Amino acid sequence: MYPDTQGRGGIAEFAALLERERAAISPVATLLVTLNGDFMSGSQIGARTKGAHMIELMNHLDIDYVVLGNHEFDFGLPVLNERMKESKFKWLGSNVLDRTTKEPINGLVDTEVIELATGFKLGIFGVCCQETPQISNPGNEVVFDDIFKTSKRCVNQLLADGADFIVALTHLTIEQDKELARQVKSINVILGGHDHEPFTLFEGNTMIHKSGQNAFWLGKLEFVLSKTDPSKPVEVSSQWSMIANQSISPQPACERIVSKYMKLLEDEHAEASSRVLGILGLPLSTKSSLLRTGECNMGNLVADAIRGELNADIGVINGGFIRGNKIYDARTNITLGMVREEMPFPLKIVLIRIKAKHLRNALNQHLSKYPNPSGSFPHVSGLQLTVDVKAQPSQITSVKNEIGVELESETEMFVATTQFIFNGGDGCSAWQNGEIVRVGDEITIHVADYLMKKRLIMYPENEGRVKLVG
Image 1 (cartoon, rainbow, N blue to C red):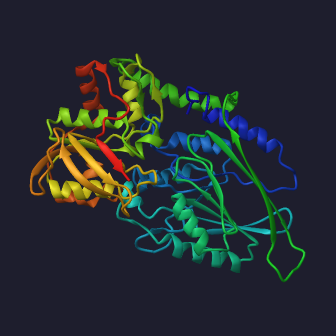
Image 2: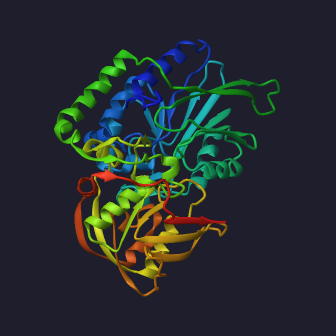
Image 3: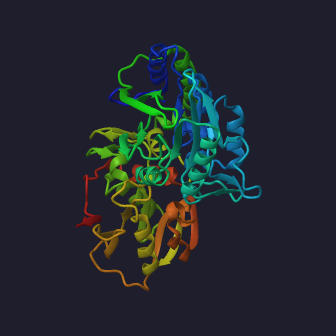
C-alpha cells in the first residue's frame, strides 16, 4: 500500500505515475491498462477486507482488464464473486471453469475483440495457473483446464472474429509463458504475472513481459500496426520501457482511499501491533527472492518457532507464506504488527505424526521446482537436508536430524507445520500420509510467543539447514 524503505512502490504513487503516462498518450492511440493477478490477498489489509480495498483502488486507477491469479481464490469462490461484482474492470480466465457447465465461471470474459482507433482489431484472453487448487482455496465448484488447450481455443476464436493482434494475459511462470509462446505462435504479446521479478523477452516472434510485484514498476509497451499487403499478416513494430515507481509524489485522491483503509487497520490493531516482542541482534531477511530459492533466516526463525511452541521434532514452513519482502537491520524492535504483516494468511499450525520416508517425499515435492523461485521452497527446523540440484527434479540425498544422524525411513516423527501444507498445498501431497494429532493456534500467535521467550533474536544468514549441492 505504501512505498518501502527505499521509496519503491506505493499505490497512490503508482496512481500518480499512471496519470502522468496517460496524459502523454497520443489521442489516436488505444490504451489498455492491465493487471496480471494476485492483487486481492497477501497483506494484513487484504486479510481484513478480503480484497475489497484493492477493488476500490483498481476502480480508481481505471484498470481495463485483469486476469485471475491463484490468490484471488484465497477467500473462496463466494468472496471472489462479490469482488467481481464490485469491480468496474473486466476479468479474464478462460481456463477457470464452472465444474457443472464447463464454461468460464460467472463474471469472466472468455475472449474479446477491441476495435482500435486505427481500424485494426485487437483480441484478448487470459489464463490462470492450473495448480491453483493446490496453492489456494477455489473449492470444488471450479476446475482449471489445460492452459495450452485453452489458449489454442481462444486464439482460434479470436482469429475467426477478425483479430489482427492477440494479447494473452497470463498468471503463469516464465517457463510456462515461454512454452505457451512456442505452442501458440499466433499470440503477439504475453503479459504475465505469478513470478515476482520483472521479465521482458522474445520467444520466437512473441513478446513476453512481466512488470514484477508491489507496484515497483509500470511497464509501458507500445505497438504500431501496419498492413501494406492485404494477403499477409499485420506488420508489428514494438518498443517497451520500464518506469520505476520510486520517489514519486502520491496522487491525493488515491492517497485518501489508501489512508481510509490503513486507518481501519491501525484502529483495530494499534495497541497490540506496537507491542515489542523482541529485538534483533543480527539483520533479518524476508526477501521473497531468498525465501523462494534457498535457506533464509526468517524461514529458519518461523520453523523454529512452530517447532518449539508445539514441542515437535521438526518444523517446516514454505517460503511463500512469508510476504514482507524486507530486510530488517540489527537492533530493530520486532513488534506484533510486523509479525502480522510478514505472515498475513490466518493459518493454524498442526502437529503431524508422519514416517521419515513420507517426510522425505514431501520435502522433495517442496523442492521440485528448484532452481525456479517457488513459494513451496521448504524452511526447516530440526533437520539437515542435502539436495542434489543437478537431478531433474532436484532430489534430497540426505535427511539428518539436527545432531547429524540420518533418519531411518520407518521412523515416526512429529512435525509442526501449517494446515495448508498438511492439506497438500503447493502440490505437496505426500504430507497426506501423516495424521494430525493436534491443532494449534494461528501461526502469528505461536511466533509471537516464541519471540517473547527469546527476546534477543539472532539468526545468521545461513546455518546450512538446506544444502544445495551441484
